[in-house]
Image 1 (spheres, rainbow, N blue to C red):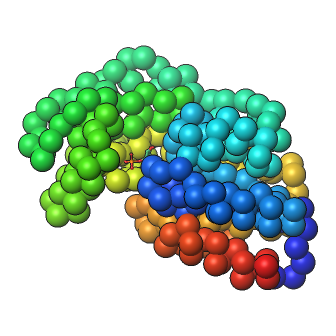
Image 2: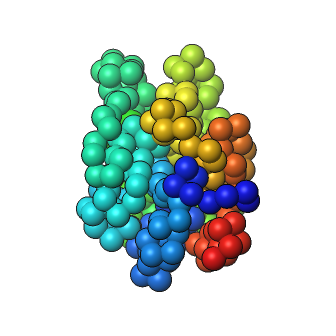
Length: 250
Ligand code: M1P
């Protein structure tokens, strides 16, 4: 790359890019980001999860001051140097009646599924998205892995997404398979590119995005192919580190 300065932003997806799925960041990876990368360039995080979960994975609430930018829920919750940049909500966007119609449909659909196991918390209502989870988010890590294997074999979530697209063609919603066990539903344009609107006035010379789910139906795809970013596909947090070292010549 030409020159490296604070006018270059490195923006990282969290799950699968900086950490193992749903696990905390390895101490050496966090140290690498804060001690080696952050002194050279501006560093931001953009995750589909809520801020509480991102903070848990990244070592605590100080995540919002550790990193220059933290965008939770794709940037609907946004922090710059620990300062809240404001939030948007799916409730405001959809209204209660449409929201309930959607949730009721999902609960009905999931009630018909036979899976290796079902637990609790099938619909998680977040500020900017609705996370729908056939196995239930309160499953254990083993149950999560078991559902994931079952889903790869039987396409549970692919079929669910197809049904949602058919049932709600004009709702202006996107249905994305982001992680291992669930589907994210959110308004069009509220994918990870949403966070870029917080960066428009900052005049970065380059914005590099690193993500693992960059395939067409992955939740990193939109920002990965967005012309405002330079996309980097990674296969693990070790791969992220390798690619960053190469990019910044560390
Ligand atoms: O990787 C990001 C995704 O992480 C979780 O997905 P799952 O629980 O299915 O592995 C969820 O927080 C999801 O919303 C998020 O996009």
